Amino acid sequence: MPHASLAQRLWARTEGTWLRAKHWPSLCHICQAWPSQALCSGCVERFAQPLTRCPTCALALDTPHCSQCATTHPLFLDACLAAVSYQFPWSDCVTRFKFQADPGLGRSLAELMRHAPWVEPALERASRVVAMPLSRTRLRERGFNQAFELARHLAHDKADAHTLQRTEQSAHQVGASRDDRLANVRDAFWVDPARLGDVRGQRMVLVDDVMTTGASLNEAARALKAAGATHVTGLVFARTEAPPDR
Ligand SMILES: [Zn+2]
Ligand SMILES: [Zn+2]
Image 1 (cartoon, rainbow, N blue to C red):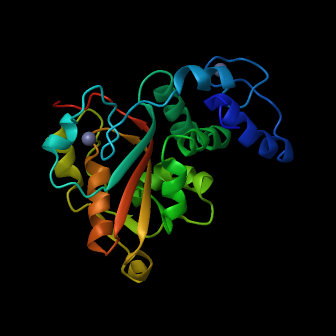
Image 2: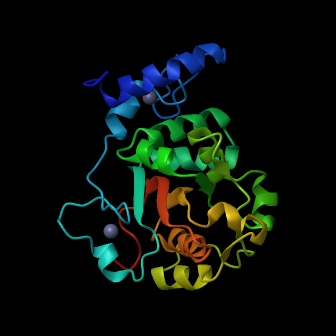
């Protein structure tokens, strides 16, 4: 289907699964149209068109040079991919997915990620699709790791929730400046020593739901690189387009 629209391609890909799974149509999470999948084709077409993005931090670009990457050193991510911008209606969808643990929505968000430019080859080439970890406390509070839910839908056989570990999160990142975020996550990640052999010499995709400044993703990539990963691609559903301090 070479000339099909994004919505047509998504629909063609997911329809079979949808029918086999006997999932009855429901309301679109965005426009409330019925009957629909979790996200209707009209909303996908309207709100999820790919943008030209920086290859290393996924910021939408309208100039040849990326201001974010000019000030972030060193970069441990070799590449970074995002499906959409973190704004209406996706910010609401992420909140619903994260706090209401809606599994149908998780599947739909992962499908949008899979269809973003360069994502499928990155998933194919990676030996593992590693979820950004939550601290034990946060995992207990929420009951599930939203990044692992996305990773599971993206690459069931490669999805990994155990390789990367995280210290207890002392401060909430929401509203923090870029420097504060960086200080909060410095040395916050490490690779489970029992799994070093799975990382050394391997290509990894590192998955998260939202990327704001990229400080956490970059630190997590640093831990994977320190454990011997040869290449780390960050992959997020939504990218904040105007990080703090820019
Ligand atoms: Zn809709
Ligand atoms: Zn950049």
